[in-house]
Length: 287
Image 1 (tube, rainbow, N blue to C red):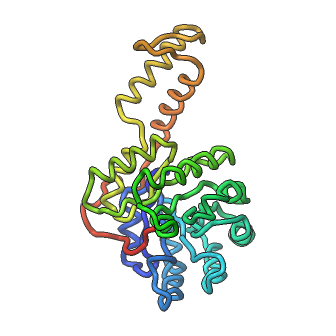
Image 2: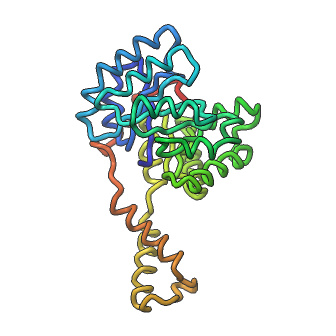
């Protein structure tokens, strides 16, 4: 699960496009992408679309409204529908809200860490029942801290999320959005930096971001060739340390190489790997 594409819950005509975008996961958004007056209607659209979600090979999550909002309880009830594979919980800052979600849905939870308190208490969030992996809400954290959205400014927060995920035994976390839609170089740089730091995927706000994100979080051909070389050299050495291209290969290096090869063997896209060139399925839904 590398690419996580938002689609507004209030735009049901975009659901099918999102499901065939090539994204590994689609997040149907009931929070930021939906005006207060439209919350109930969006929830109904999602309920009506649940059967189509279930028929797709793409994983479908729903981003509900935050704990303590007027829409939280009704959103929770929606999560029991078949076809909805999990829940994305915004403004995650403690275990309390996560316990409520876990009791009702019984489905995997992806909390969004997007506030100063959430970053500070991220290990508590990560260890809450039902949590599968953490999501970084970079845009909201930038607002909360009144800081720059640059990589350097948010590096500490990202590092805490990666470390907490590992300590809690979760899947690698999902990095925040790149808000520039037409700057492919920026998207590639952001995704590459997140992957190097230990993130396992990235949020997308347009289908045309999906292919680049998938590529950035998958081993390239050169990496795979080197990984195969490491594994073969280690096997020829009978399990002892060996040098490959002037670099010592011991057990940690071997295990990382095997992980890369396993990832390449297990990486699968969505039902349709040909992402459209245009046609945004998401608007005002950055987190």
